[in-house]
Image 1 (cartoon, helix red, strand yellow):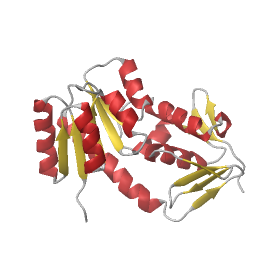
Image 2 (cartoon, rainbow, N blue to C red; image 1 turned 90 degrees about the horizontal axis):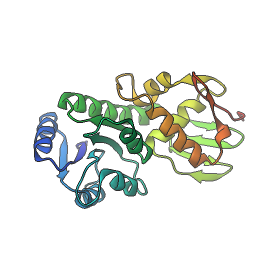
Image 3 (cartoon, rainbow, N blue to C red; image 1 turned 120 degrees about the vertical axis):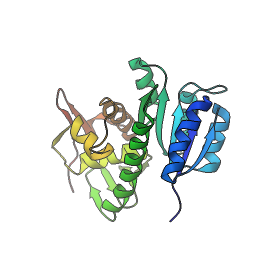
Length: 228
């Protein structure tokens, strides 16, 4: 089997040395970059399974890098930030980060999140093979991981797809944010619960209609479309 490839983009050599030492110990193939432009190039050439991305980078910051990358890839991204302000976390998530860690962080915690993300990607693919969820307006091919709304294809990232699929597997039933975190990010996810709200917003925008996912205030979200 091909080795798992991790790309680490950070302008602090000490961070790169620490993280890559752990990656090497776990047997992952890795590549590093220390500025935005070289990081974006590495993402395109190295084609990693997961990216660890610092928000503060010379040449092009992590927000701009991720915004450009999301136009062509749904690779799983864990964003690092030296700031603890809520706005920095939300901005990172809003442009497509799947998770984030605030510096200083424990390398063991980072490795735990990397392993959990990779495990979810692998088990998720095998779990949904071959099934199709058909509704009046939406069709979800879980094997091919494709979405169509009124016969028009919609492009979703891996996390967005899994969120919509999870809700659609329980039509008319309210799922709490905690339930969605457990089902999509995994029971071992211990990041910010608001990540669910941000990605739900992305799904709604791409579907082009808010009525497919209803917010039940104080509880969670419900999928709304008639089953065929």
